[in-house]
Amino acid sequence: MTSLAALNSARSHDADEWQLRVDLAAAFRLAAMFDWHEAVANHLSLAVSPDGTKFLMNPRWRHFSRIKASDLQLLDANDKATMSRPDAPDVTAWSLHGRLHAALPPARCIVHLHPAHATAVASLANPDIPPIDQNTARFYNRIAFDLDYGGMANSDAEGDRLARLMGNKQIMMMGNHGILVCAATVAEAFDLTYYLERACRNLVLAYQTGQKLHVMSPAVAERTAQEWQADRQQFVAHFDEMKQILDARDPSYAD
Image (cartoon, rainbow, N blue to C red; front, side, top):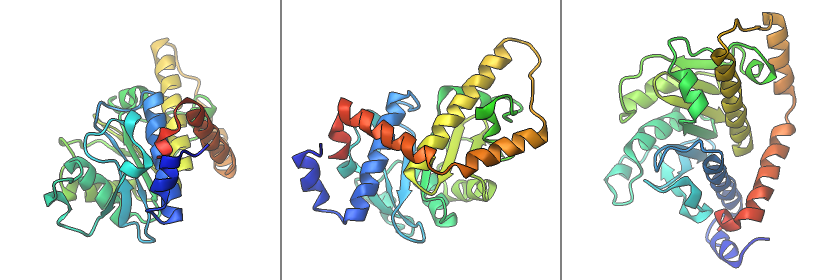
């Protein structure tokens, strides 16, 4: 049930934008629930303009478990005065998400996190994810890799570099850092992040046995990845189910 506070907040925003806010706020709460967050760091953003330059993002240093739809900041990647304001977002978030949204309009929702298993794999000399099961096969030949970590992503140049590396991929393994996920909707971005972390967990567990991996053939891996891509309804249902779980636990994300 939608609370009165949520209804009052919704009246101050365009209806379409409000739904985007609710979905993104849900993704923050779910990231905290699954322990993908990193203290008060990491960021999720969602474009609201056709060209992607206007986007919603979490305010600086707010814990994911407390974020509400009304808390999200509406930012403009072309507004150079943004970082001089008292409520400026985190500098790394601005440099990364602002430049990615400006350079990659199809990337409506951008997720940057440091989940434990995916970050562990991203920290290996070879951060590739071999197709050893259905989850890992989802990402076969569909990952961009950044192996040139140079410190905090706190400049436009770094954001532009990562946008070029991402290209038309949806996933980036950020060496010595974490992950980037780009998708057309919050639901798809959440689902990709969920399965990427599950895939990396399975891979880490397999590596821990010390035994040789049983890797799928390229043909089987590619067919499996295509079958994942063809199922456009499962990730919608997944996210809807997770929002219902949130509603039962704590619906305040929608305020």
